[in-house]
Image (cartoon, rainbow, N blue to C red; front, side, top):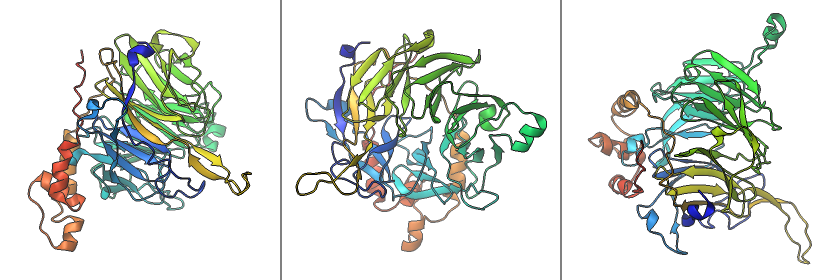
Length: 470
């Protein structure tokens, strides 16, 4: 797969609506900001982002996404925008289906309040909350990482030297289990424990589909593996061998035998063979020497596992068939796609589209009337946008997928969070009765313009034919 075969062309973009103005370096204000986090929904229809102005946004891909030609890409505009709040992590429900609003759920961490389960179609509505409280200070803990278990009945939250497991059906209740990721000083001194575990904030987590092993990384540049999706014993822990200031992302491959680890402020990606317990290879030349979180994506092709990652230079880099190699090596392909840092890469199931976000905060000194630099620096994203790019790799792509068993979770959610309440919060104030039918009731709870919102939902689904899997 060469650059000529990729042939990327921009088919949708937010353009410059997020980078037209300068914002304060310390106080987010307005829509001028770079994208911190972004996730493509499992059904490939929507993107949820978290930006510098501390707002969640949902973008729905148009049905005519692939019909864009030439220099006239589709304009992407937010379908829903949340109120500003400080957050470190969010995760989409694995059974996300845009045509069923009951499944378009977003789990998000928030500072000084419980973990919140909201809806991508109305990001200001709360379905449920899950408090994580410091037992000493009784203050709310804001997790730095979140992930759903494979049965979708629980989720795992990572905080400072703590991992907590929650039951999704227990609205308003704390975790069902909590454990420290690091042995105490007394245990290390008295019992001579060699493995310290994870120190600092647990900033990255991922659960293996085949083995249900939970991989967690911390700001102490350490990685630990836990059995039974965080509910079992610690299997092993190790420190990264690269020069970095922490772990920004961990990702299992489809077999559960290899673990990909991205370090914070590091120009390399590490690949570990968990069967042999050693590092398989080191992907170098990433251009990610920044405190900004820089994501990567695994793409399984007919030739092997490829790694896609963005850099601060605006380039997309592809390391091809990495599991068949050892040692250190640079990217096989380098593709310029932005004029600023590429912070997130998302590849669509069809293999015909990939999405990127870009932007970073820079110091800009205001000019005096005479043209000299003076005054206070202000934060500014020179280019902050979300792009969808079409490419011709669909005959090669076989994306990694994990099957989720959603029946138990959906039953608990519908029975526990919807049917038990006779009226939605908005209905109580207006004195309306509950709309009959689960779908209609769901939309009623989401706010005004129920019928209009329900009719718009299927129309927002991007109809991209998925690649047939062997």
